[in-house]
Amino acid sequence: MIDIRSLELTFGAGAAANPVLRGVSFGVSEGEVFGLVGESGCGKSTILRCVAGLYQEWSGEIALNGVQVGRKIDRKRSRLVQMVFQDPFGSLHPRHTIETALGEPLKIHRLDDIDTRIDQALSKVGLNASFRRRYPHQLSGGQRQRVAIARALVLEPRVLLLDEPTSALDVSVQAEILNLLSDLRQKEGLTYLLVTHDLGVVVHLCDRVAVMLKGEIVETLSACDLSTAELSHPYSRMLVEASRGVSQT
Image (tube, rainbow, N blue to C red; front, side, top):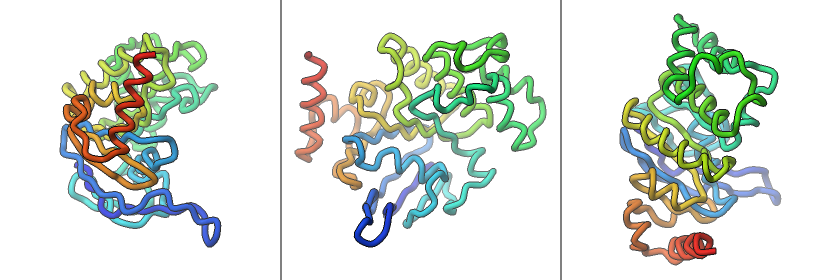
């Protein structure tokens, strides 16, 4: 479903050039949850933005559902792939109702039955039609993230790009969102590309995971291998040890 080959991206030029991605290659099968982990600034979220079409100066190859995509975003790509951002409050317009937020992409793509589609998208994430008239500030953090997921689902994509989807939420709400994402994957037949710092999220949700360091993938393994510490790269072992240290404090 996702095939990335030799993906590279550099910000700046000349002496100020900063290589962010260095020949990244991996594939994600249909229905799979593939995680990207690593320290801040290693290029995880940059990959998602390249796949989504938010960054356009990359080189290499990106294929979605067997078709290579260009650097500029188009409607066909938007129908296939949608992104859920880390901060649900920041990704929703504060002066737009939930109805407006979910209806806008439907109008852009000239789809019919807008009211029905909005209600269906809200229902999929566990919210009823009464939320249509509310504004983001009237919702809890968990409800806002559910709305953000509903907005991503309203075009019925096959791939969701998840950029730290639970890190901005209270611990008590994180499990609810993870369980929702897991259920949606099964019911909707979705494929996920997930960025996270939380190895617990990887073990809970992912089938496979790639460990990134300084713009490169240093190791790809199953989530089971990660949980049992079957790791070959020293940086992967350091991540697991650090995660265990945090969980014990």
